[in-house]
Length: 131
Image 1: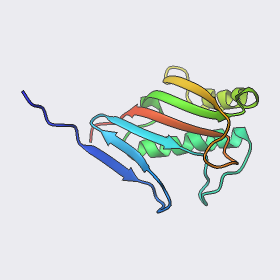
Image 2: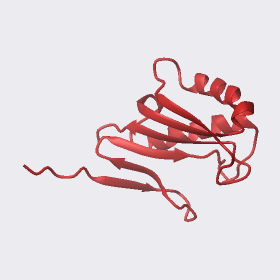
Image 3: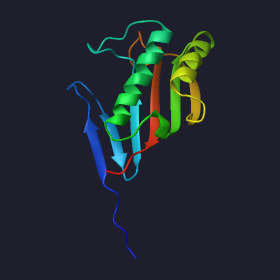
Image 4: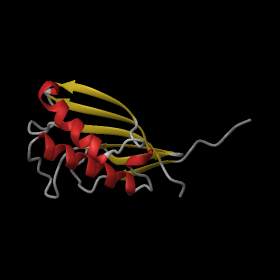
């Protein structure tokens, strides 16, 4: 018995400079990454501001495919200077991801991210809502 492969849908980034899709949906799963850029593509602010921005961007990307923060199954957080930034990120995380909606997560300390001013980046796997 042969089953058809789940369709693969790639949502492009809204800029021609992007090196990857904004979000990829395969069947009932959405895969996405968010960085803390503002509307002008700039990264500014301390870990609190960047944490809020990155989670808000993640929420918007998931909403674009009919999902949301409450549908995340796994979240990977890449955090620069983990000793200095962990508590501030976790405070924002607790606020934006209420208890009962928090996914499995992996917090990874990294030496640097793609842009030197970035302090945090997140990658999520979420359940996509039926279309």
